[in-house]
Image (cartoon, rainbow, N blue to C red; front, top):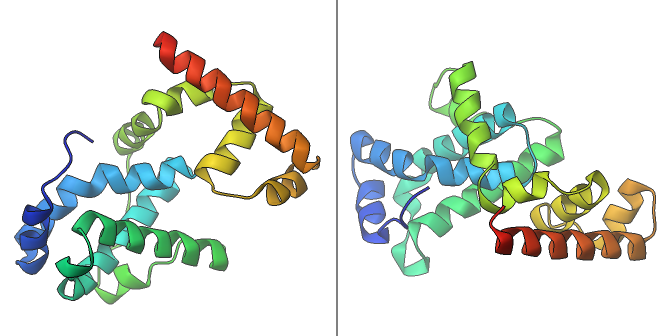
Length: 181
């Protein structure tokens, strides 16, 4: 994911031709994949969601207004809409891809491995080392942005139990990250 991109370059690329949009895509592909992976989706689904996000961004690139924010924030907003649409429909929406006449995304084992590698960096790798109950609670609350009542209902426990699991999980993550493991 490297350095933070220069928004000025991104704005120019969004206003440019297909080759320029390709540069924008290359710069932000890992970022968008990581957005979906942090929500706990499978690599294959993250790839489909990212493809739809960029298809929508390509279709809407002329509507980007730098006075309203940076290109990365605009792209993040599109990604959030894509995942919300997919959750609401119970499947990955592909209207943007179909509108552009793009083929369905086929990813191979190498691409899956690269996407999976994004999930195992920094705090996400430390998260994998937590006990399962804490992992689920932290992923749901912090990464999935669910409230305690929602999580309690889904996990079949009380909101106070979920709060305790999240608290213990975050404390353990903090300790692991400070230790460098």
